[in-house]
Length: 340
Ligand SMILES: NC(=O)C1=CN([C@@H]2O[C@H](COP(=O)(O)OP(=O)(O)OC[C@H]3O[C@@H](n4cnc5c(N)ncnc54)[C@H](OP(=O)(O)O)[C@@H]3O)[C@@H](O)[C@H]2O)C=CC1
Ligand SMILES: O=C(CO)COP(=O)(O)O
Image (cartoon, rainbow, N blue to C red; front, side):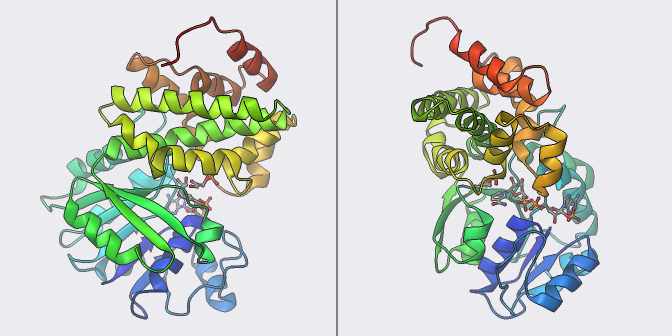
């Protein structure tokens, strides 16, 4: 089978390496919008800007031509959109315009669309209505606890593919479930995608707590009450709350909120140290999706009548309305209530 990945950031590059290590030489292709970046990878064998110190398999094919990257795929192959959430709608629209037959399409981004508060699969469905020209594409998402640096280095990892199509789940497993990677299948797109979006916001909160030296008890409280917020929103949005107890919910929450490889956690630590958000994002050099979607998650919760105090407070901190220590005071000052 052939696989094309669109987007050569940390995660697209790591997943391309994972597929290329196990499929036939030349069957996995990584596309980037920057031809210069691909030349650098070709020369050094590494994606120095986004995944340093990971030697990429020689079997990986690099492609700067978008049309070629799509046209090499048959109806049985797999297309992976590996851009951040901000690039999803533009990229899927380009794919659908370029497609000459039906495709199997997944995305790896975690977040919500700002303003519309749409989940990734809802963004894709909107673009499908506008661009599919009657072709019946199959869609899904891959998510779960996975630092790119570890996956790129071939370390063990377990992920979830969620799709309404069991056939597509099988294709994704054939592409990635090899060696040190396990891929579990699910049909709960809402639960999987909301888990991935909310855990990033909670990782920023955990980073703030740790940066302010609030202690291990505080971190456990943020994670547990944050998980309760996630489960409430998933239920209200039509997903299954029990999905939050799996890899894409609590699994990714534990990883991102406690692992210093997390960009979102590092944003929280830096905010607690008094750095300004623009300064933090500039020095990060990567996307931190929790920053971009905290307000959208809070808006969606308000619209669905779901109480999410930690998430709402993070929205206020990230939009500059509240200082981190004021947010902590406000959260601790809430009235007593039952544990739900
Ligand atoms: N890194 C990780 O460990 C994991 C990340 N994810 C998720 O995967 C998504 C991507 O993250 P990650 O790879 O880490 O991000 P990075 O910040 O490392 O890289 C982003 C990449 O996307 C490219 N890009 C941005 N917008 C577009 C666009 N419109 N069209 C084409 N390419 C675009 C950038 O290109 P350029 O350099 O030209 O700007 C860059 O190559 C995020 O939603 C993240 O939450 C999920 C699991 C693990
Ligand atoms: O999603 C991730 C791990 O599963 C990566 O988290 P960060 O974006 O916070 O680095």
